[in-house]
Image 1 (tube, rainbow, N blue to C red):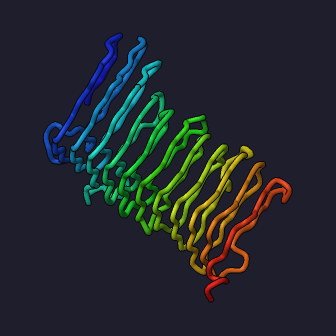
Image 2 (image 1 turned 90 degrees about the horizontal axis):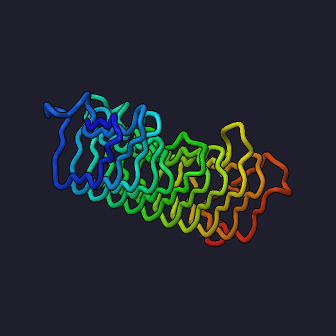
Image 3 (image 1 turned 60 degrees about the horizontal axis):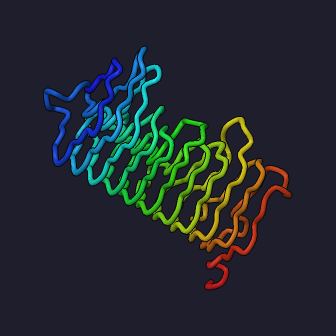
Amino acid sequence: EINDFSDLIIEDFKLESVVLDENDSHVYHGICIKLIAGSLNSSSIHDIHIRNTSFVFNTIGFETQYNGSGRFERLDISGCTFIISLTNYLHGIGVSIPGQGKDARIENNVFCGNNIGIEVGFEDVIISGNDFKDSLQYDITSSSTEELRLHISGNTFNSPLASVFFLGSKYIDIISNSMYIRRVQFQATSNMSLMNNRITISESIIVNSYGVTEPSNTLIKNNYICINDDAVIVAASGTGFAFIDNAINTSLSNYYSFSGNPSDAVFSNNVNLHSIFN
């Protein structure tokens, strides 16, 4: 645990090619690495590099925590493996960066068997090239409703028991991922784009179906979506919802619904491959 309670600025923190196990004496309460920024004084931790490191944990692999005005900037986590211990598999989180941070890149990591793969609250986050396997609850989640600007691309999601996303933040791009999942959920999202993904689902894609605020400007375009017979695409009320130019493979004749004003939604140029080839 690194705890910054002064005006000190921690710069260029690097950890590379290390194995951290929950049974090691230096691992604190099942958390492999915990960085704390700030208290009564202004302080920050920036230029954090975690690379090629293996995390075996029962609570959290890597965590940031802030107090007062403490902030994090420029976080790089790449080439790492996050594996949950069997002793606490219902609660483990691979990477937790809940807030007061900016500019994070989480790339080319493996998240295996976590309850949650990544919990994100930083602004300007790139999540790319990661492999999510057998998450129990969510692969990626955020409880923030702020303008985080998340870019999620080139990842592989293979967690049949989990939801891939539970995101409440604004400005999200989900592009060119491969998803084999039970369901996808977006919570009260505004300015969200879901484009060029290959998606196989067994229950539902639920867009804009949670929260008390009116979501807006949701674009689902150019995706290949294979839907099992018990699945449906659902869009609740909101303005600027567009579902266009997608290739669908389902035996269902009605694979979407919209509970808001129909004039607020656009469904066009979608092709059901099942009806063409069967």
